[in-house]
Amino acid sequence: MLKAILFDLDHTLIDWSAAESWDEFLRRRFEPVWDFVHENIHPLYDATLDDMLVSFSFMLRTAWHSGTRTLIAPNFPHVLRETLATLGVPPERVDVAEVMNVFRWQPMLGERVYPDVMEVLPQLTAQGLELGLVTNASAPMRYRDRELAAFGLLDYFPRCRVAATEVGYLKPHRAIFRRALDMLGVMPHEAVFVGDNLEADIRGAQRAGMLAVLRAHEGVLDQWASDAPGVQPDGTIRTLHELPALLDGWFPHWRNNGHNRRGAST
Image 1 (cartoon, rainbow, N blue to C red):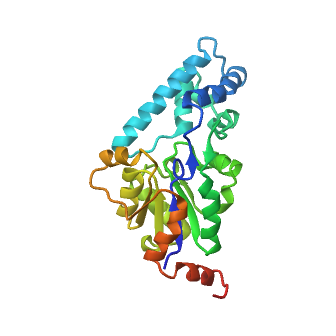
Image 2 (cartoon, rainbow, N blue to C red):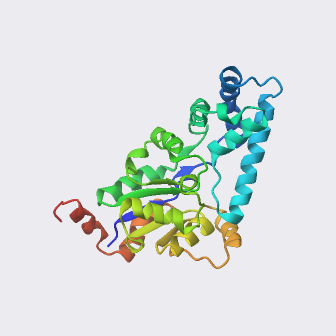
């Protein structure tokens, strides 16, 4: 019986193709951070906003580079604390949650939800399926939740939203998938995973015991395939509208079973 669909977030539900650059996003968000730290925590007479940006970007890139080898997840708030320390701010004076609030994490300019997402997710939940998110985010989920709320997605994932940094490991590590399954109380054979990355999403979900569906974007499939030799998705879709047909083949009665789980008559 199919009970849950788990989704990757970025490039699966959220479209970044027209988003502003990461550097532009950081500069806008770090301007109030620099002012706040200078005025309320520790004077930054010997450091500029550019110094802060360069240090933070270098440390975060280093954490991601290491994570691709070790699968240890980077942590955005920790990197922020370390950045301030390199600028001479005493760590004991930093309340990193307070500084992250000043950062005001919000969607990037140009970031948007793929149109098919808001058309298909209601179809899935109408059948009684649980939906979950599993993302390799370095920011804790409470910050990514602001993006979900802004896009009208938050209510579709009430019980399962997992960021890698909170588990400690990046996909394809089994731990992050197990965390999501445990949150929903389902077994791997009762769930399907949908993602855009052959290595992180497809290999990871299959190793965790799930059927894995690749959302293949134009021009991206060959790139991922070269990075993940031997990985074959259980299904491939170009749009989420194709997902229910795949589910029909794997779980012929998933629609009716979904209604039964909610107590509706069939």
